[in-house]
Image (cartoon, rainbow, N blue to C red; front, side):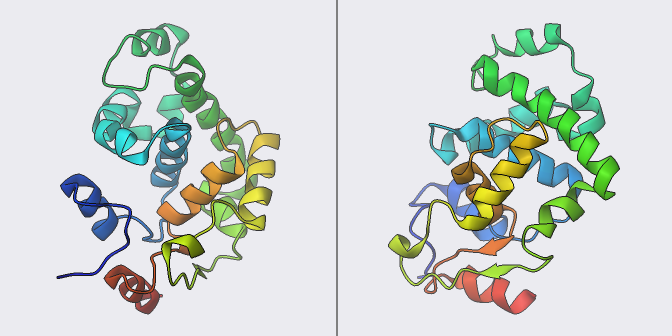
Length: 190
């Protein structure tokens, strides 16, 4: 049997996400933007809730194409508040548009969202070297700094815990536990 991190449990969607996406370094602005927005949608909920709604979020939010999301109208977002396929929280849904606008400013200043985000880890994946599940932190000094800077730039739903979950998902840190087959695969790929 393949050994993996504890958190996907037996849910096939969760296992596929863990095995194919989580922790793979991302350098695409659109994808990084999607990940940070969806992590924000998770606040107070479990990731599987968001994962099950991800395709619908992509449909409603223009596949997270930053410039298109920045142009969404209040009327469109208000309509999304009635959509049971989304997490119907006004602040969370409006945050996707405000994050797109903040992301555009970051792109102008840094050349790309990718350059900005990866600057927090000096452009290199951090090896978490986590042996057991209790070794995995909820936040770090780096996620604290990222959160503070994102908030200063107008991003919403980017607390330190959300930023750390984003760092894990987007591959800025390899937090697969040592017994997990993905830990070795990802460690050997950089």
